[in-house]
Image 1: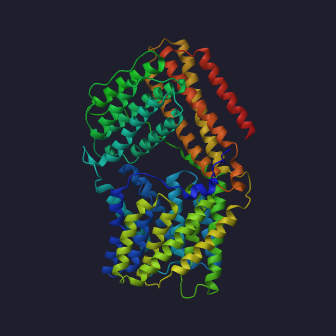
Image 2: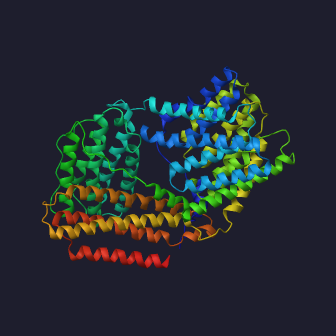
Length: 622
């Protein structure tokens, strides 16, 4: 009898896993033209310290320079940069006017605020990270400039990379208006994902393809949801992209309903979405689209959606507006002050405050010797305590390994490179490597360690590889201890908060579909003038349901990869997420059937009741 294959524990498997994909050459070029160029200009001007701050800001912005549209990059890179500049101001003036105890308390409060805000989402998390790192740098980094000058230098460094992101074209972006290359790719990927789901209908791979479709829709929604250029000047290309995205929503709904039925569909059904994807990428008309069979309600819905999409694509002036995801201020405040925000904020505050206190104690006991960068310890703890960067043990292992590798490499480079010319070149090379290194936390840590140590030497301090390793290992120990401490309230609050948001969105979507059922029973199909608005609202609610479900699943996956003492607090949540997914899929199938027949059959009603009962049972068990 063969032995079962050895399986790595989840916490170790996550540490060894890296993202895959093509090299983002445009981001590599931007990285090479950011930190190194800024540092070189400042050194030539005789203001090396200003260049160091600007290069740090460009490095942090480079970590947020991910694939996507230019408009999304404004928020993804700009908001954290503004938060970082604010952190520099707080840290600088706090460090000048407060003693060791005062600055420790101040940084602890900053950690509480930044941690709570980080629970809102990826952009808020990036802003929280830069707020914390910059406040530690401002409090401890010996620079001659005043706080407001440091903040301006920080904004200038991040702003320079953002300008490069907005101005430089990317490969293949000269089809039409290059400003919208990221948007075109994102919308085209939605149509490709629809075709993939249709191909997988009736197979075991349908579930994974539906998840891929949700991810593509989320990415496209984000790509189109940034600053609207047409607020300042009319753009038919922009309006057309919005219309093409909106036209994909009924297609996605029909494809999801076909996958829910569990029967294979003819290959011809997927040809239309693929031609639409090609038309988006090439910025050309669609031409004739193959019509699928109209033998079932979901197939008839697919055919109708293809006809609607063809009209939207042929309408050169654009049309339908985008229904973007808007979160109210009250919703954001509920997230910040809810269970997830409280747990996140307390843990970040404890780690940031404890590492600041230990650093201050060591600094004033002269353990640091001639080195004055005590701020490295709390700044390192920031990246270790962020749950959205991966499970705790995975982050610690990757951070330790990456720091040791980066510090040893820098020790070798520092021994042979001329100063400051060679160090500036090293900073430029590291800036170019960051977009690739972000695929694995250990690789990102190694590159950032090289870059930071080079900046420290250009700023006039001695080589500090050994100190960097020691402080990182100490930060790892602090975060491991604090990360496993019991907290007030229920552990796993972040996971359960996201799961609660997903359930609320799913129930809102279901309630809307049931209201449609009631209205269709009293009005003949087609006579309701509100039908178009009703379906638009339904598609918006459906998007929110699937998006919040994807966010919950991502949080559950991270929690499951923690050590068993932490992972056990989220046990049962994966089953609840699966039940929610089945409820939303069933609701989508019911909505498509409702459009076709005007009423729900007993089979669909039973399926909905069964999905709700299953969810209720699992909710009680968890």
